[in-house]
Image 1 (cartoon, rainbow, N blue to C red):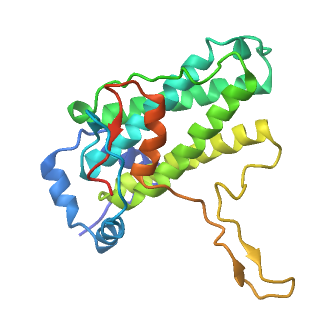
Image 2: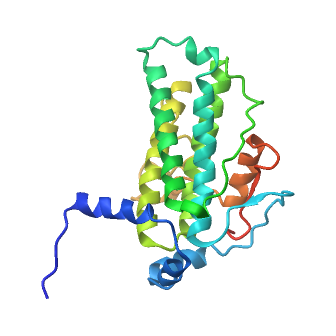
Length: 254
């Protein structure tokens, strides 16, 4: 039987289209046993770390819906943050053609696109629009804004890395991998605005150090891998920037 070959571009478009279909329980169950690889990822995520319970929190749910709502919540927070940057004198005081202002403009567009993407993908399963609380950030001050941006971007990268184990549909894992790579570029840009060549500092990457100048390849300390955080840890931080009634929990993503 003849098969139709697709170009890489067509395959990527198909993966994106798949994610933009609201997730149905029937599809979720079909994919739940789809591959040993996906099952292995799921089992690897069944840790015993505790979560800080938040009263009246919005739970993101379970399975693929839960992961997508978790990502949607974080993207909402980032999009709202970059939108609010534009109301402060730090941003309005930047020259319109300055690299710093253009970077902030680009990041605002990206984060809004990510949030809209997840909202469309989730359809009626999406959590509500969250109300942020950025009262701890001085949007008139460069250091306050960029350090907050650094925190949000680093948190986003660590969150995607830590949530990958819960994704059950292979196509979604591909999409998540693409988004986290963009988030990592954001984090690198913001970090370099604050301190040159700080984008791979030890707080975001488990840096590898050879045991000695003559040690063999791979012999040393550290993994050289990006650090990741479980949902409970991420939401403890994210909830500091959400109003009561918009705070989150992820009780099924442990």
